[in-house]
Image 1: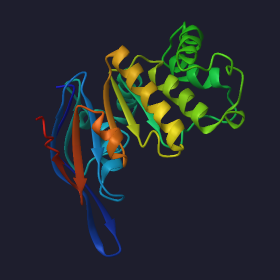
Image 2: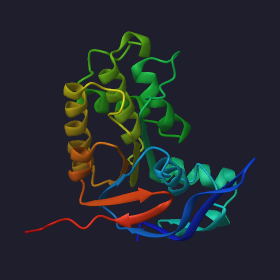
Image 3: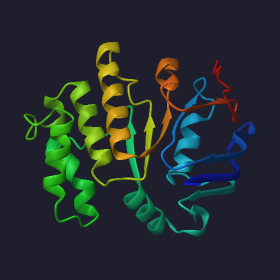
Length: 226
């Protein structure tokens, strides 16, 4: 399995005692799968995504990425796993304001030592339809254009896994639909494993599997295949 968790939990201390954000979770995701995680706000979806990506540390249990147990690594080693194997798309885009669209996409590849970072960034921005926006800064781009830059940035390192946290949450319906189509088209072309947190049930249904988070408990949604 490309992603595997074993009895994964996340607890935080509050003034009222221990809050169990994620209860013992076993999860397996195979290479090439598309998986949606749905649930109400505060149910633990984004926490699970952060744990899977090694952005947060579990209270107990393990996460393995490509047979590497993240709990066995220090922060520098986890960062290398993220750089080598993982791409991210966030609801709020998280582009660097002082960098152009081209520079935002190039940055992860440059940090990874890719000598063809600019070439790959230009190719990806062309794929997402922004070949005429290379020198524009984020504040000169619409929300949909910023998310296209974010998608290009996520793919520049040819990741094995793409984590997306509400990728269309800040977009209007028409723009969101275009971003969905672009994301799934690029994901299919790249053969990337997609794990997506979304509140959009229609978007979730486009994935091969749907998991529901409810008060920190994860269950698989069984779909009618008739």
